[in-house]
Length: 282
Image 1 (tube, one colour):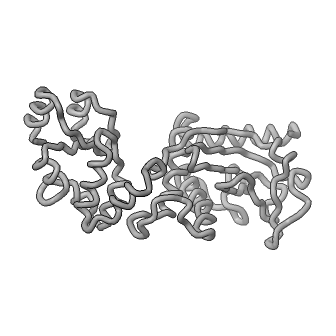
Image 2 (cartoon, rainbow, N blue to C red):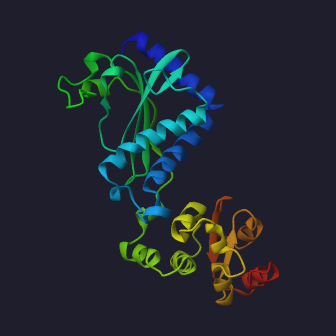
Image 3 (cartoon, one colour):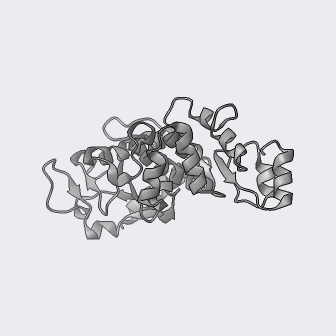
């Protein structure tokens, strides 16, 4: 990498960290941003799709646009005049791939690019910076006159994140038959009951609940008064909230739940039963 390029990319890295209000915040939020981008394109509540592989080719391409929008919002930076972003007076493009390589459009030749790559199978992501000099690009081009970053060019990428974990898609680890049983149940309550019965003692996010519940006020499905929570209570199962029941979750020795997660538990000791009864969950 040319020394001037390295100086430019190091300065950009520091600017990204500053805009994120620190390196730790950048590393914490960008992986979640990638997960959200993919999930919003999968759009389970409206499409009943669960995984990236179910998307059409054009939809997969749109993940890059979602990442651009969410990253721009997270860092609070303006759109560029020609490229995706304007940072410190520089035009910067964002290129995303879910495969191996990135395709660079003509307007970004010789410019700075933020490269993002993700693998749903591994739940790992990469984020790097490059100045897309001509010598770093393939000689050939596609019908849109885009060029691939060459093998030599890949050596010139300055990596900020490499093989970095991002939140896993819950459905990647669910057997196809189990997923089908959950999603094909005849009502939102029945779908959520099937979900939590299949995955006891495992934190389940609001996003998964929304996808399974498939209605506007999806959280109503797990409230008392006609929701799945009442069914569980009648059958000796407690549905706990990471927001309201964190102390009980800790007392029972369950996995830690974030404020956005719920966990179902079927107590099997007198002590656990009493704790849940005292809290009104049984």
